[in-house]
Image 1 (tube, rainbow, N blue to C red):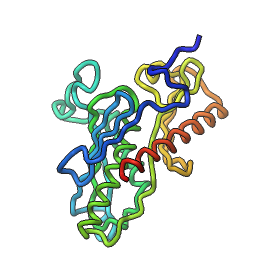
Image 2 (cartoon, one colour):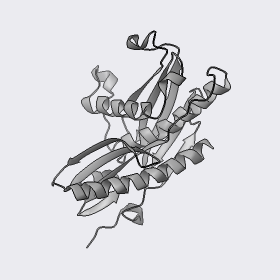
Image 3 (cartoon, rainbow, N blue to C red):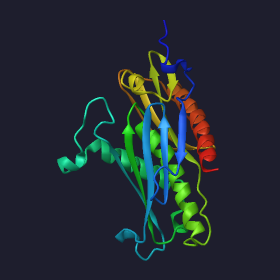
Image 4 (spheres, helix red, strand yellow):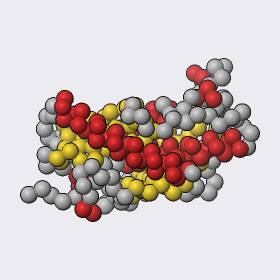
Length: 240
């Protein structure tokens, strides 16, 4: 008998996704991104400087930071600041967020400044990195609109739609947007970052407990691309 998904959703259905723009008052751009019970607060801040390797090039930069609140999960986790260093998972995820959002933007259009995307997990139930990328894009769009309105940019830079979602094989079924229970038992687990046109920016995937065929990979990518198109519609609605 096939196990029913939480909320009774079908294998090709996203969780309830909600993006609330302007969630943080003081940031240049912000959004609360919710994938079911996963909630990530995303903000964009602006610094009027660039890293040393970009000085004199006329190009800007975008970087990201990611973190989880101590009680975002079932038991309290120690703050990484208290340990004095970030864990490998945190570094890997924030690099993924940065790469994904840099692919959305022509950095030569923002001048010699740095955009810092902060993604803080308030509550985790699987898919925190995909929610961070999806919400981070909305925060970025709002920040660029604000900079343009303040005449800090000659024009609003073109921002390519980018979103992210998880897919996987659980109990022999290909599923879209895994929650924690599904992710923790998945035989195959992928995270996809892509555009509205079906182009992929990044694919992170592994066989957790089984091997998988090229045909199965193609099915998962197609399923994830369908989900990304729905997420981009939600992003567009959030920024009006």
